[in-house]
Image 1 (cartoon, rainbow, N blue to C red):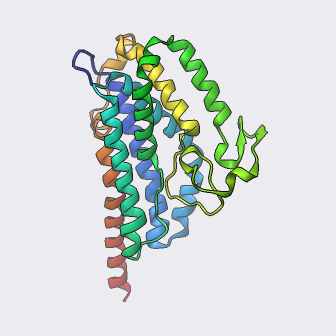
Image 2: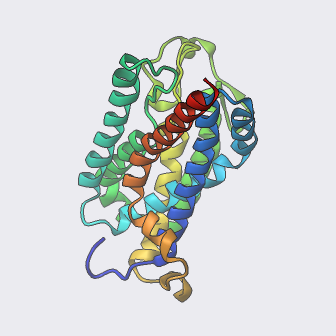
Length: 256
């Protein structure tokens, strides 16, 4: 953050809460994937209904923080690089170790990194735009683009040509063929508009106009996770896998 901006503790806490919710959600999937327990998959599927809520919190906060950052472009390239590293590990290294089905192409880090870079390039225009107009336009564009990965726009009201969905070249934009699979996937459409919504909202954070209680600490553990969200994201799957494989190894020894 820029040194002259007072830290909004609530943003860290909400981001930490969203990250921990994601960790719990992924743990249920990994229980099914690693241990082969169907109830893990069942719990994961039931909790999917809550996913968009936590995604929105995390992405909007990231957009707000892009307005507070010293160098949004630099942060974007760092996060995008981390996303590419995740793809390298899950799509290249893990399959060679015999772990398949967990490949990640254009996951949350790749999406956020791209959003940061685009926002950084657009920042001069964002600075000149009335934040209320910017948020309204971004909310509209998000609604229009929602459902593009399913071949529709505006929450399913408009059908897109199926010919568009015969290639994976446009996968970062949300357009892909039936052959595409990714364990974690966030398309730029519509999530870029959610990020930009946060960037416009960040004008009020930059000017110190958030409510006074948002600057106070409420939950230090959540704030700690929120401030280190990148490292928690990168470490959570290897940590969960390690614990579950140790559990599986113990089970095998006991029942052998």
